Length: 216
Image (cartoon, rainbow, N blue to C red; front, top):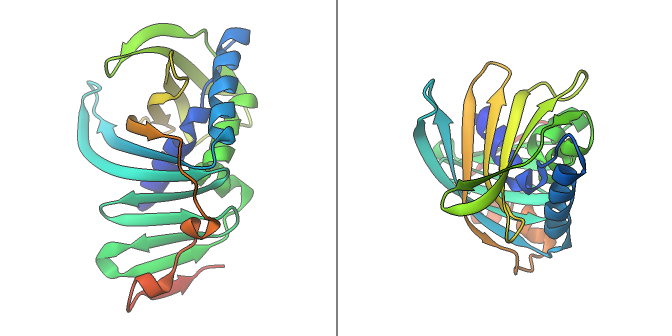
């Protein structure tokens, strides 16, 4: 469960990044979205993540906040918080007051890093032509992506909706290799923050009595 949410959330952070197509049009949309995220000194996202049932109805919705600066990010949810400073990851599990520290491999980073996940659309994905649609009340481009042979096979397919006016992520639907589907909806987006690097590092002084499990 924890790994699934890390995968989902990290994707969300970067998902402004998960956009491409079988021609120049989709790639141009994704490139513009990606460039916007990279240009910001700090982004804050409010999101809702849900599991989709066989009828694609959303269940078990959970809300959270994501803070992004380049390849660094912080995730806040009801049950856990995650920090990643570009090298080291801290996962704080609130119920047991425990933090796990690790240095992800390149493959693991592709599952948790916004920039790494984002960049996946540039390599190894079959991209379909963008479809104009309405998502969460916004005019959007819907872009479908399927990983090719040798690509990250945690995902069977990825579907992203990009706001046509602002070129920001509106929604992402991830279909995992076991056919489980997760939907991420971005409810708020603000790119006007200026985060210090310390924002993306776990500080044990803020969590008295925390048990530290160093997995490095």
